[in-house]
Image (cartoon, rainbow, N blue to C red; front, side, top):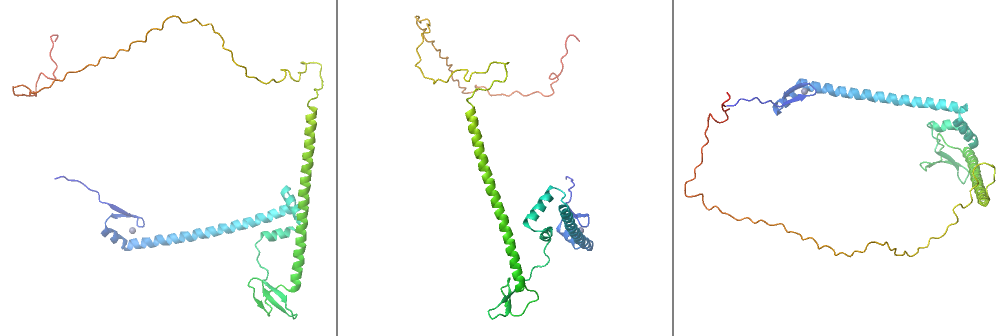
Length: 296
Ligand SMILES: [Zn+2]
């Protein structure tokens, strides 16, 4: 009877940090145990605490980043105001051209806290005014808390018109500039063409002599003019090789290798005598033994 040791499969509990046998009974026994349940609860509460902490940290970081960005923007605007570098000079130039001040830029960069009222005052045919919601298309006779009166609407209209005019003016200027650019480009092109013509005209003139020393100036065509290549028929050249008068030697006789044919011999029987096998002798002292020689 063979004796052997077999290792039992074991299971590890991550919550309790302990080992137990890996079978249904002991697993259920462990998982229903008071200690295991407590440990699992502890683990879950730790996890939720951890995630809450992380969330808070993230929120704080986001807030800090927002603050930093706001501070950076403020500092940058200050720099722009002081004409610190080329970029800010450019920005100021653009702002002065478009007619808006840096305040509008600040407003544009900051999130708008208050939307304009969506109610507008409208005059009906009989002269009384009612109110129209531009978003929901509602109408009412009662004045809402906030609305744009007719006077304000006219003001806004004027403002928009002036802005539109400004925009058109800028557009016109840009178009003019573009036309100017095209004109300049065309002029430059014409000038270049003229220069090229002049250069071509100048080419055949002989180069001026500046120095008396050095090699003589090269002729314009030192190797003569080009001539077309004509294909001429090639003559058969007599190479005066010795004439062959001897007869050619006969072609060598190819000897076929002799094919050896073996005779077949069949062994019909092993003879009349009975077949015997020699037995091997064990414990033969003569085998594998060093033989004595005469020298010793
Ligand atoms: Zn456990």
